[in-house]
Image 1 (cartoon, rainbow, N blue to C red):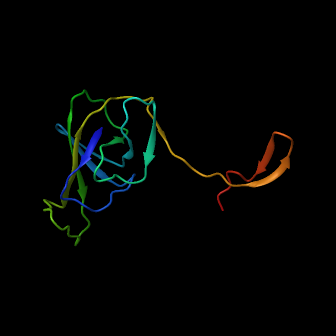
Image 2: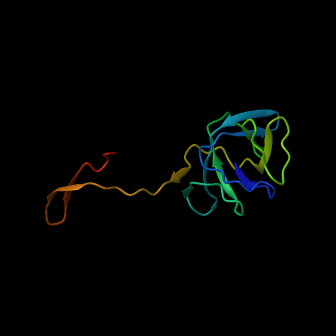
Length: 136
């Protein structure tokens, strides 16, 4: 989905936060991954947060839909939680809108990580690193 934030909602929204997608008559409760929107590249950079000023792409697992499908994105409020500059209806607040970009199972969301480890054996052009994927 190609998505854009509403002006009224200013709180940060992280990737994998639970959101409610309303696509036509379907309500999908999902945890989307956000990535940058570029039409020229086949690899897209993963974003930790949905930035308020940019157009992003939300990736979810869901039923097959046909383009163009309009989209409304809601966030469920916790009991007793209030939001400034916005109104909540039945505990839901509108955080964004958009449309279906494509149904593409081959889309790559690339996330940069730093690998650490201990050098075990060092040769001229190669090295063996111990505990590279160890998570302490």
